Image 1: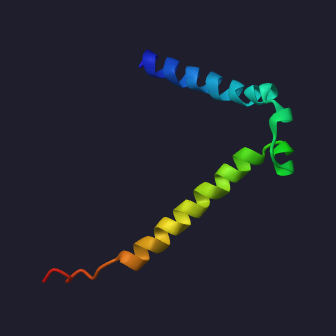
Image 2: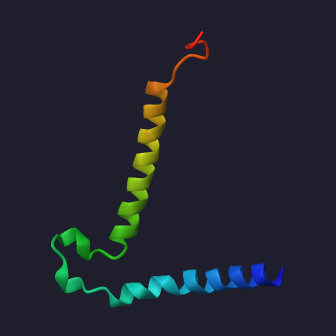
Length: 71
């Protein structure tokens, strides 16, 4: 049980310090003006993930077969 507690504690520390890595990002290498916004990539990733989930749900509705399809 102690190892599980240590793993959770370690993950908490790693996740807590991850945003500070953003301080080392080189803003001079941006190609588009929107890349300069702080938090653009996390927001873009979130909306891309939500879009993929919605697309998968709609595709599932489109490809769904009836229960007696193989009868």
